[in-house]
Image (cartoon, rainbow, N blue to C red; front, side, top):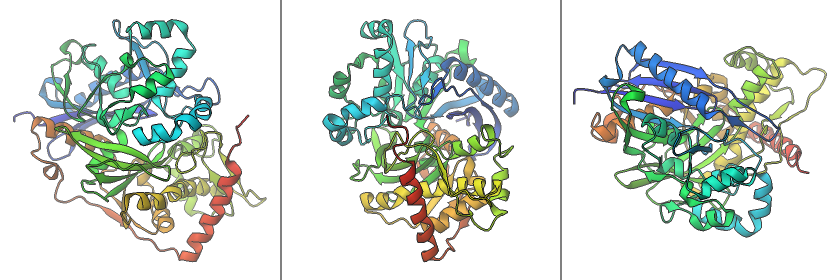
Amino acid sequence: MTQQRILVIDEGTTGTRAVVFDRDSRVLGQSYTEFGQHHPKPDRVEHDPEEIWQATRRMIAAALTEAGIGPDRLAAVGITNQRATTVVWDRHTGDAVAPAIVWQDTRTSRYVDELRETWGDKVYGHTGWALAPVYSSLSLRWILEHDADLRRRAEAGELAFGTIDSWLIHRLTGGRTHVISASNAAVTGSYDLHTGTWYTEWLDALGVPAALFPEICDDSGILGYTDPEVFGAEIPIASALADQSAALFAQHCLRPGEIKSTHGTGTFLDMNVGTEPVISKNGLNSIIGWRRDGVTTYGLEGYAAVTGAAVQWLRDKARLIDHSAETEALARAVPDNGGVYFVPALTGLSAPYWDSYARGTIIGISPGTTREHLVRATLEGIVYSIRDFIETMATDSGQPIATIRADGGGAANDFLLQFQADILSSDVVRPANTEATSLGAAYLAGLAVGVWSDPEDCFPPSRGDTTFHPSMAEDERERLYARWKRAVDRSRGWAAQ
């Protein structure tokens, strides 16, 4: 094949990145911009879909310019995206009809309370996701309940639903394509793992028309073609992956039992469990890692929704830091956390607690508490949040956890990864390229169009990894974690009416 360059659109929760890769995984050009985070009420997190689309167009142009190529020189386009964020648009005009409800949003907590007894175990058994506000089906119910005209239009077949991958593919193809990748479908809380189709019994119970939903496609394969009038050339869109699935692939977790953690807006721990889904008995979520040629690789996941976002809170709201990179030096400036614990439950607690009424809690402040203690407590809280569910993951999967591969923006922080190794008593390996989501989407797009011949062919022989080994004594590890559990108990249920 003459064209071996791949453009990846990496649509995160707080910003848009576009990256051009070559066959050797080298970055030829890239660009990044943040977009608005809207909080009209304390329990709401929204995005403007049109703002995301316009930011995406600008970043694509900038990345191609830096790479020195036009769109016609691309072999494929790949997409990776924030998961479970709900976008609804008009099928005919392509215009979004409501703000996107972001996966961190908790406005549907009331539905969860009402439905847990009758539907909680049932939907968990079918979807592999504990009933929680993150369900896109619940967000759709909220949208239709609060706008009678949108309900009428939905029932008339005039509206379309999708996650961010669906929205971008719709726009990139000039409105011709309404699809969702399998990995994204599986995190909506609307996908039946046993049948590989939408869970229509659940949607009927919610009063959400199944006609809103997109066609489910492979994560690696031709999902559509870009419209030349929109993109500048007709190029295959050859991958679309939920961000954590993309990172799992890029971290070379191709076999059952291999595991990675991604430190982004939230922190996500994901394990490859093979070609049969595992439904957790302890509150973890089942994911689709990727689907290629109709064959599905499944995973188990635990996540904390607000970790990197807690560092952003330190920067943007508390104004204790100017840049996220400062946190490593500040955390090292004190010998310990000074007895301060920060439970970063700004939008509730996820696995294994699933308490949407928990709220962020800083406890243990004394007259000697400094800015450095607060910053250190924030980074430590990220790691404790992982410890909360990692033992459950080992139990549910039947796989011991000896090594964890770490990626995402937070993985550049040596203090964070060393503390992770210490508290989890596991080696933590950081790859040379910590932006694994983009690379995973590139690999799976390239596999679909022949840039790489098989998954092992994607990975360069020398990876330049860095390994952090645990060095903390076991009694100290357990003492610190016991105090964390006390702090979590005090954060729980705070926002309940």
